[in-house]
Amino acid sequence: MKYFFGIICPSFLLVYLLTFKISFLFITIYLSFCFYLRIFRNKDILFYSPTPKVLEILQKSQLQNFSFKAHFFLPTTFLQTLCSSFDARRLSLQKAIELKAIQFRVPEAETSLDFVYFPWEDPNAEMTKKCLMIIPGLTGSIKDAYIRELCNEALNKDFRPIVLNSRWLAQPVKLPKRGPINFIEDVNKTVNYITEKFKVKQMYGIGISYGSNMLCKYLGTVGRNSDIFKGAVSIGNPFNMYQNARLINRFWNFLLCRILQKALIARKKLFTKTKKASFQFVEVEEALKVTNFMEFDEYFTRRILGFQSLEEYYKRFSCIYDLKNIKVPLLCLQSKDDPISHYAVTPFHESKKNDNLIFYTTEAGGHIGWIEGFFKLKVFYPKPCIQFLSSL
Image (tube, rainbow, N blue to C red; front, side, top):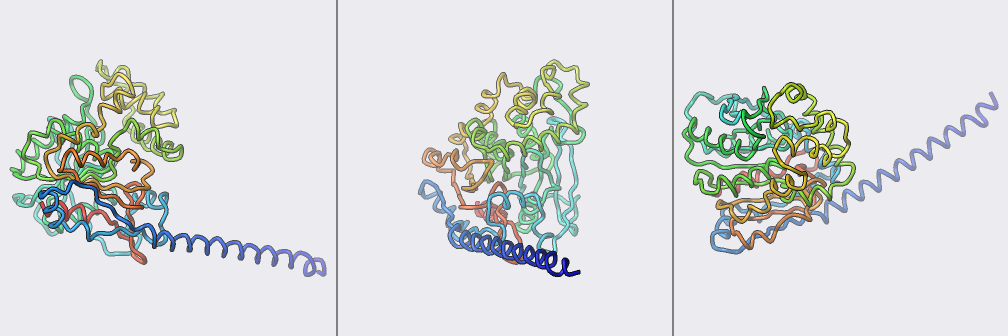
């Protein structure tokens, strides 16, 4: 008993006090760090050519009045990016409206569309709202919180959001009858389908991450001569995929690879059974073994898209070379601490060549994160993006 009270008990007490002091020290340091970033990382910058057209758009959209301040307890790149996949409203116990969607298949492109509406709306009524086509990231869909946030804000501003699920994400997945997959041509056929089926006269677009690259590529190539689009927004765009891929660190590289592999596993049988010549060189098994997303793209992505090499895929599929051809107002929202779509390759100089381009950068936000607030979490970018489109 003396041994217990004389040695063991004091030892446990000492360990407890030391642990408490160390924990308290770490908590103090972290809160101080959060406070520092909250105060000093809230500088938003706009890059544009000060032409009369651009100045009028900025005046109407009031983009200068928006300012992103990262959530006090989520100030870092890692936490912001991690929370991008969470539903901010549910995390902060806010009442969220459950949106509904009707899905349409686009036979010409084998893509699918989620026609989003409020529960009290009649989905069969003639569409009188402005059409907003949303192209998610690599594996994004209406199920993701960041897409629902955009749809909710769009509906509140009298837009009709239609979420495009690429051929790769539509169910069931169908490969082209001839040749490799052409994502940009699929977007073109989908736009034509929307305009014909819903009698749309004015359309707007929002692309997120990989989807923003596709949207800008479309607007600068096959869609540049069309007058159906009135404006667009690019969010977290990689722009130059060739340079960007080499800047992503090992952690995010590995995570991206795992996300792509998870999507491929669900569609593995499609490529093992196909006898189409265009997909005979796809190495599915090798793509599922690698731990680097560039190797995944080498064994799988660039082959299903018909490119001869990884370098050719990254250079020819990047939208950076087509920005000069975009003929509608385009807002590009980027974060300086984005670990996937790097700020270093953002082509701000293109705004001098094309006055349709407006770049909006924030100090923080991670990759498609932009979680702000203090006690209640909310996503920053839906409001400025939708307000920009509304001003057009």
